[in-house]
Image (spheres, helix red, strand yellow):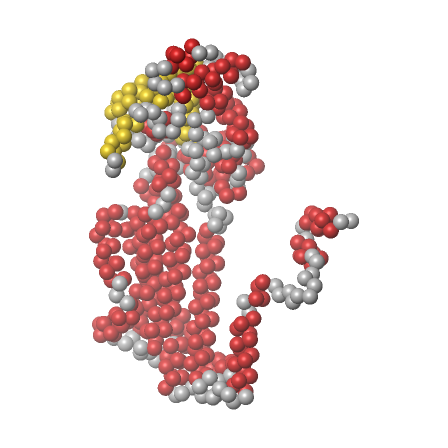
Length: 279
Length: 270
């Protein structure tokens, strides 16, 4: 039986795994699967870092070994502080993102559908957007105090713009050929929006939500660094004040994990919403 | 509205004095003095090179172009804007990528007032037209899972589901491969014979026009005018290699390529 014939038989059986397993190996070369390729650098860095820290080349109060950082996370968890801080940060991001994304959806939808609304609102919103958002912090603190309101407002502001911009633009850029189809079948304005414009704009809207969520995480860091008595950002400041590099690094890792997890969730929800659409 | 007695419905009277587009380089006269009557249940093909205004003419009948001098009547009623009494298929399928075949066809009824057709009737009609175009096994597929020919079938079903009196087709098979195109030509004849709607098909493919049409309207550009109207009195299914078929094809070809005013000379030459 020739190899080609063997392969065909395997394909017919629907067993692609078997097919790859039986594929001729690259003799004399190390074969690494593609999905493991991305792990090489981080794992090597971790190993070198651990080694240097253990050898005392890296001072422990400056860059503690990965195992020490892991231990710090464990200790904080056991003490019960960690869950509280993580929970509060997630809650801030959640509420801020929800408010910002809702406002972004409302204004994006309005300006995307009504040219009058766009002409009225867009110049102002664009002007506000050109202010680096962190620059609002002193004003928010002055107006809203150091409590939750100023933090959530800042996060909402960060989440607002990508959602607003993406939705507004996507609604304005719906293929005119599809709009003609709606016109042919005599859709009402409401049906046009619900059945054509919004579904057509959905992929870009989801992209906007994702980057809005990313910015919400950036802004929660800013808000918590600038004045908080709880949250991962506070943990960071605390680590800095008390000279515990392990705590700072642990916080960085926690931010990364939380941000990545929520982004992954948003992405999964987006894929579900987009369903079987061709991508 | 009942669809019997349809034999008398679907008369299109076109009286367009002038249709111009104004752009940055001045105005372009797209159509001039177009007078044409299409009979109920007739299959008319409009042929012409690019820029002869054939698509513009179809878009005016569809109600997508509303700025022009003149009027178009359907069964004596002046047409204003689009309407479910006309179904349209474009060169691109223009299906909605987020809807299944079934829901794309159902989209053709989206603008129909709720009292005009019951839910039951609607779902029966949707199924009927999906079957008619031969896609009953693909009802729940999405557009990206379909071939070009299948997508056009869905577009035809969507255009027909509102039970229009006139079906307007704008180069519907132009982007299909040659074999699929020929099959779709047979299919559109079968559908037309089943539905008996009036059909107006715009094409630049002379053979397609002769294969399909009861009458071929030949247009010439700058400005877009009707140059001639040729009846095709051949029995269907037509044989593309038949002598008479070839003769008609050649005469349309010569008509399209002869310089203006030399039509008779060209016709005499064979």
